[in-house]
Length: 68
Ligand SMILES: [Zn+2]
Ligand SMILES: [Zn+2]
Image (tube, rainbow, N blue to C red; front, side, top):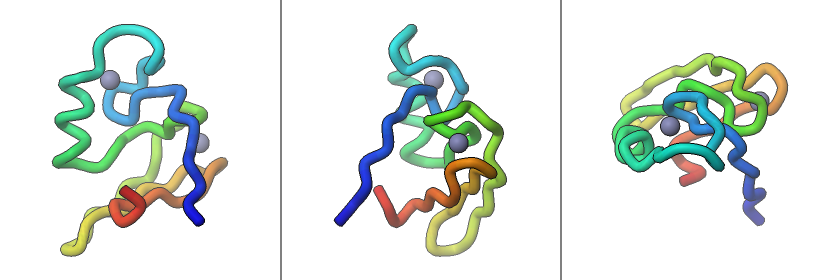
């Protein structure tokens, strides 16, 4: 079972997802890992590897490209 996270902040620009237009951000996120945690807006530690990427928030743990 997959846990769906509430994305309060844009993973690309860190802005609130409820405000502004993040279409370009969504397109960028299809190609590159997010920089900000969607839940707390912390900068995440991003690691890129051949199979994709993983990003870690110190509060919310790992996010990876496998999770969609
Ligand atoms: Zn954005
Ligand atoms: Zn977080």
